[in-house]
Image (cartoon, rainbow, N blue to C red):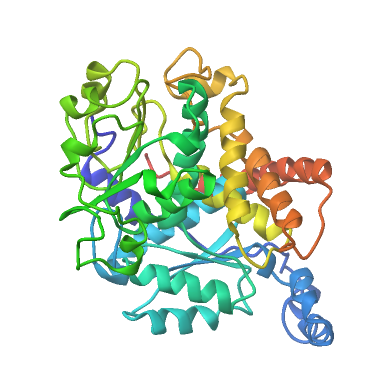
Length: 439
């Protein structure tokens, strides 16, 4: 059942001040002295200090807490290529999530750029201003080239959340599902429905976790990806099976894990019944998964199932990842977000799901309690502990792999994170509560 009407959603975006974000000064500007320090002539002191030592830009500006959410609107949510203007509400929403979950400031930059060269050149020009770049809603296969080039050519973290967000969150679920099912990751058979940016990134991430490439059976709209096909780009060809093993229905037999990033009703109850014991089903198509939750559970009560929806157990929600991954990367001033940092994030989420869950978190989701098991393999998006579990894990991995440029005391860092969020929540509440929106 929908929680809102179309008109309520539109009113939410247009009421009072238009959109969802605004820029607020965090320094006083009430006197002549304040004004002279904020701008001329006092600002020159900060400029001179940075000119003498460019690293001072992190001390005297907001660069160290500022992320650019960059999109050309070519693959917006489930809406497709609707363009940068129509995609802007999504990018503003991303900025809201960055702020409320991890106190990261964002400018959403929606650009009229069609080619990889245009997007790459634009992003490279942003380096002096931003501490990181979150690429968003850019279609495949161009998104792969864009991210790869920017990671190589820039010295700040660049992260395409459409690729890696779902990979990291579902990867956390896979870690725990394997433990519950008593299976070894290097032995499982994985069937993938979908071969876009998200599906390919998820499968590559699972491979980094230990899944064998030869045990991956990936399907696109034309069927199983295998070496007999001549219509494959390099990203699909990477997962090509040696021969054609048949239809999705045939390949599902004996599968340990199904990953769906495609369309609703892609698999049915009979396919689920044919899977191996304790099957892991990650049906992430939104808003309707590849198989309805109740149909899958009725067919196989022993299945461990996750979807992209909040009204079923085990939601694969990207908000569990990107705010905290960037928080950790920014705070240790990482030059990139590498595979070790992504795996550390997934491991931290998996570990948190095993911790006793506070009653108030369970109550927020309408249940009496949440305990580690087949219906709770991924922490809830509203669990405030995610910040102090994931951000430090990411920062530690950055330090361990040599991509961090400053060292953090982890115990002190966790305390600072909690204090930072308390202060941010208080500031944000003061602004939002100053208007009566009627929602």
